[in-house]
Amino acid sequence: MRRRTLLGSIVAAPLGAAVLGQTAPAAAAASSIDPRVDWGAWEGWGTSLCWWGKAHGNRDDLADVFFTRGNVQYQGTTLPGLGLNIARYNAGACSTKPINGESMVRSPNIGDPRQIDGYWLDWFSADPSSASWNWYVDSAQRNLMWKARDRGVNRIELFSNSPMWWMCQNHNPSGAANGGDNLQSWNHQQHAVYLATVARYAHDHWGVDFTSVEPFNEPDGNWWKADGSQEGCHFEPATQRPVINYLRAELNSRDLGWMPIAASDSWGYDSALSTWNSFDSTTRGNVGRINVHGYQQGGGRRDLLYSAAKAAGRKVWNSEYGESDATGMSLASNLNLDFRWLHPSAWVYWQVVDGGGWGLIDDLGGGVTGEASPKYYVLAQYARHIRPGMRIIDGGNGNTIAAYDPTARKLVIVATNYGTAQYLDFDLAKFTKPSTDGAAIPRWSTITGGSERYQFHQDTTMHGTRFWSWFEPNTVQTFEIPDVTL
Image (cartoon, rainbow, N blue to C red):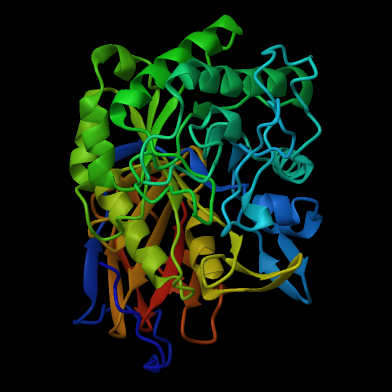
């Protein structure tokens, strides 16, 4: 369930709220950070590049905002760059080129930015150098991929919303009329050929080695229909299995045996678990990582999916999350649930530029973008501070995330407070060396209904093994504690 966001009920903090001498406030809610519980190395934060890549992929300012950690000038304001290091590149499914009198069927409800041009134009030849392929389409999304790479993105995943239109039963890449399977049975291997060919071409010509290839996008959904507003395709688990196995063989045949397959980008945690459990041992062996989407939000058994992945020796990515709560409090709540129960090694937001509260920056249409929402600054609390290579450890409760940087010997704590203003207290007694008594602790604050977007403060101090801070309602704060030894 989404937490109800409370706006406007801001309680004034007492003077000097972050530091109260040597005595902690008696009513402070306590978190005991436990470094003995280690959930593994963090791989990073990311976003999909479609559809906003098609609409805005040639803009350097947006690339700087999302893929650097600098202070970026954006439309008259300064934004703290998010430093995303993961990008998901979508292999398109659309083309206006007819084949022997047959043409793509377009949903009447789909907008141009949501139709991504595909590279394989017809079924006459699988040779990527032949006239059956056009490697110049989709230039804006590809340009954004390059901009992301050049700004430090080090993990790029290739994924598919739908097979090429001519592989679909009704030639409509938005889905079947009834929301069922839409990939023609004789094109199971062809879909694999398409993705493997794009992966090899990217290696040879684009300077990109995909971190992984995901052949599906929410294949469990029955909402991918011919009149839909997106590209999409339903795949029963029985259809997913041969596609995965064909894809492994096609990647191997192109000397890409090192490139793992991720699956299945299920809509929610329970469906992801059910799909994984339906796979035979061969198919499981060909899946190098479990991808899941976070649209079940407060529901679903994240813990069971994590247990299944751990038993199989697989990492988990939350490869897509999004909602229309522009305050960012739903994002914080679901991030906390993921870190507490799912233990992903990476987390990816769907459309960082979008309308209706879905984006971190508002998309006004016509190539015009608006301001950054509070959700942007909430994600900054996590993405700018919990960095790749850090170890995710037990934050002590469901609203506190902790990460440790072993090189810098720095502990990062990101904590969320909801509807009641209060002190939060953090205890580091379980560390071998919990920083020096009196050490200054920098903090950053985002008050989603108030004046602090991403405000830096230098007013917090270690007191023995503890420190504390005042939290307004609906606030996220980050603390970086120096000189901590596990």
